[in-house]
Length: 173
Ligand code: NI
Image (tube, rainbow, N blue to C red; front, top):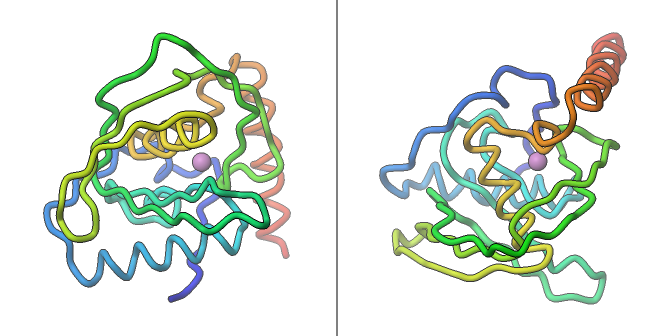
């Protein structure tokens, strides 16, 4: 397993719609392992393939975040939201591609998601709490959408300008 480089906003690859996975290959399994390692290393609770510059519809997540909690790594291939609750919830969201910026985003409080697992089997599960927010945030990445796209334009532009500045500073070393 190896930690991959996480793309930082703004990057055109983070705005693209990712391609569905047609079959589970060894390469895809390797990518899933690397994405989990990259996510835990960051540390974060979710990561989508486009964030490591692979334009496939795959996400990983683990929202069992308490120090004492048993890790619950999940790999979701071609995930689709198939049901959302009318009830909404608000979380202070962040993103590994937009480090150190957080903002409140409102989303359905509960969702049902179907996906293919690494054995090629279709699974379906109900998510609530942080898991529901996380899975929706990660699926958004597969459609080229970031959590800042839910914010008012002024706030979004402010974050983008700060990220541009950060990237210029990083490039200079
Ligand atoms: Ni994100």
